[in-house]
Structures are given as structure tokens and as C-alpha cells.
Length: 143
Length: 94
Image (cartoon, rainbow over all chains, first blue to last red; front, side):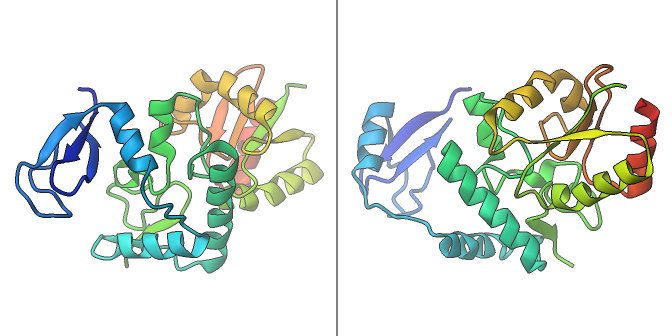
């Protein structure tokens, strides 16, 4: 099924997916999403605030992302530092925060799977592995 | 002598660990491995992509680094391994 764009008619949140959220996460209104075109979605998002995400912001974001999950950001600070350098180099040079330990294929859809954080819990380096970690080692199973 | 290549990423911690092992391997054995960086060199990246069929089945269906490949036989090995395992793979090729 193909993903499409949806807009909350109350607060203008934009959602990209095969179906709209039942409950708008921002305004909490039920059944508030209506399908819109890609162009309309781009205009809404493009006109929004320019929320830059610095390296420190991203670091904080992945720490928050890991809270409540069974994994954590790798306690090895030097490794994380090197990975963050790669992630931001990739964003600067290739447009997205691609994993520095995998190569993009140039297939847009396929390469979305390489944006950090990726869906590593399904990968063989993590799933069912006691000391599992994502391929690059940014996230490790919480001890 | 077959062409052995190591595809690596400059900011990949696994690659960083493997590079000194490749240096050691070259000092101790006749194996020679060409190191090609793929995130900052599009020519190298395209070369790695050209071996996708050989690499992906060994690398979780993706183009992961570090990857070692014999460009003649297309025998590929993927990921951070210890020195002995790297040596076994390399000596099998030469």
C-alpha cells in the first residue's frame, strides 16, 4: 500500500502514512485527518518554523527516544561521537542522516531505511541477541 | 593475485577497528587489500554498489561496511571480525 499525506483539519498537523492517525497527537481531536496532495503537504511543512537540529539537539533527541525502550544510546562516548560526526556529514553531503556504517543504494524508498535511527530492532544484530546492538553500534540493548 | 577490496566508511567505528588489522595482515602475509572509502568518494560508492548482488546476501541484504570482497570471485565478507577470521578469509583468496 502506498503512503499518502493527511492533514488535521483542526491544528494542521501533517501525517505521511497509509492511513491517518485516529487521534491527532497534537490537538487530541478524533477523526480529524483528511487526505491532501503532496504539494499541499510540502507547502504546509515548508512554511513552518525553521527548526534546525544541532548535533547536541540530535544527541538529546535519541536519548529521549531510547527512554522507555529496551535499548539505550551506547555508553561508549568516543564511538557515539564518531557516529554523530558521520551522521551529520551524511546529512550535509547526501541530504539525510544516513547510517555511516551502511551505504545508500540511490533508491529513495530503500534508503529511507538507512536514516538514523533506523528500524534496527528487526535486524539480526539486535533481534534475539543478548548483547544486541544496531549495525553501527549507536544503540545497544539496555543491560 | 586477485584484487581484494575493503569498502569502509570514514566515520564507521567497526571500520576504524578493522583498518589496523588490515595493516597487520599486509605486514604478516602476502595478502594485499585495497581500502576504498565509500561515504566521501562517490566513485568508490558506485563500485561498491556494482557488487550489490554479491555483498547484500552476506550483509543483512544491505550494503554495509566494512565489507571485504574478492572482485574476481565475488566472495564477500561483512562486518567487524577478529584478526584470525580476517586472515582466514584473506588467505583463502590468495
